[in-house]
Amino acid sequence: MIDKSLQLHKAPVLQSLRIQAERQFTDDADVGKCVSYAVDHNVRELALIIPSLILPTQPKILLLPSNFYTSKTLVNLTLSFSALVIDVPSLACFPLLQTLALLKVVFKDESSHVRLLANCPALSYLRVNRYFGDNVKTFIVKVPSLKSFTYTQNDRRASRSLVLDSPGLRHLIIFDYGDLGSIQNMPHLETAYVGHLVPQPNDKFLRSFSSVGNLYLRLMDVACFSAINFPRLMKFKLHLLKPSSSEFVPGYSEYCSLEPLIFFLHNSPILKVLTISYDVGPDFEDLPLSWNQQSSVPGCLLSHLEIFVWDKFGGRRRQERECVAYIFANSKCLKTATVLPRCSYRLEEIVEDIKSMYRVSASSQLITHSDSTILEG
Image 1 (cartoon, rainbow, N blue to C red):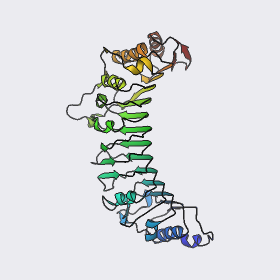
Image 2: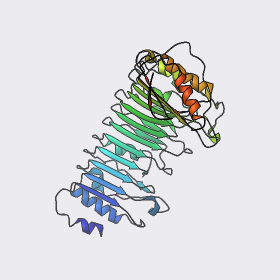
Image 3: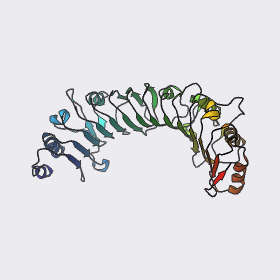
Image 4: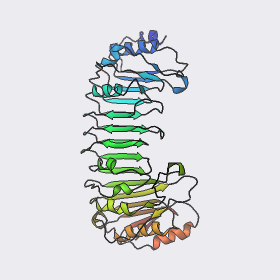
């Protein structure tokens, strides 16, 4: 019935078509007819969405028409389904495709997605949400034209890896529990949001981001910071997470050392904005930290850092307080310092302690959570 409705469309160009199944999915014939009709009418934007609740219990090949894989007009394409398998033919080619979203798509084999991406010469934006049941162990993205890439892989149990070799990237978002050790250098990268949620991340993945200007990291450990230079980095946010007891591995210390953070600051000479935050699971009151007084001061604190934020400040641990005090005492160009206590218990006492810390930048402003007012230095 859907394809008959489309036949009423008389214009030679179909600007946009969204096909979304609302009932039990049993046959892809209607879907194929709709897609074929859209391609024949020079469709520019196509979305094929089949909610997982109505998919067959066993994965099956989704037979899309041959003209779909050689569309010369598609600019935006969204595929979203998790129990239908895509088999990309060797002759696939999307010469004008600029935006592609693959949301929980299952490919027939390890090379199907490679063939698809290799034949999108104009692709500039790619979004991939991995499905926990897909069969691709190594997801390979080698797209020279790519400018923006978003990748989500939430399956902690699967042994998966990402291979990324797209040197033209400007913006990158990755949230992954797998291996990120095969990311090539991205010399033009402007912004990166990376959640690498493994107990002991190594520095191999981080080296790929050495050219970035704005960096946001979600990590369980900062030991990987020690020896990597970030000569262009101006904004950095670190969000620390404590692993659950089931994620501990042999040799892992429950204490998160802050010393590598100082190495990171030494290696980020023009950093202007620094934000630190963390959260923990319900079984932990605080993220255990370790800190020792430093014998030297990073150059960015002496001549560049203007904004400093410490979110969820506990206020009861010497290590945490001394780290904040160290940054206050050495950031000569600081304009705004924000320290936000993580709970209301002893709030006034914690705020007074924050206010009492010496700030070398006499004109800096201090923002606390108690009243959200700005206090002159």
